[in-house]
Length: 157
Image (cartoon, one colour):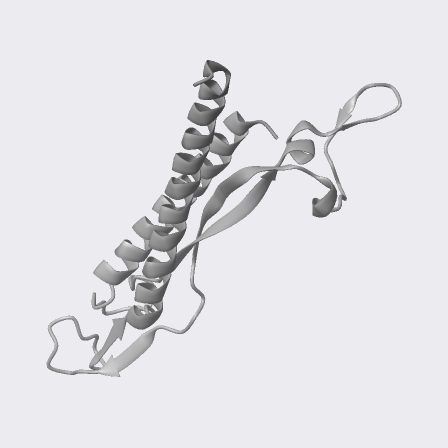
């Protein structure tokens, strides 16, 4: 593997963790938002990641040289090229319905709806994303140092 590819891989990891941090921050910011109906209530969001695989991106050529998308492969046989954000999905966990008839957002039955955001889980996710981001920064710095040392090998001292 080329040292240059390491920058791309670590950069894609940093990008993915940035998306993860942003969705976690959004979830926490909306954790106590209230709504008068299920449809309008904020739902927790999570990013979906997938590995970027070299052979998968390029496809496999058939016997005539035509590129076909890969339909089945063993990920252990393919070189990784980083991670990609496939999208952001909403949680399907139940929303919290509370009977608060004096709340200004209460519906006609006196219920208000709170998001399905677990603040403790979000804090844990935020700490994990932050550490993953930092690890990717350290990978980039270590790779940079290795490249600089390679350049000084021929300088005889």
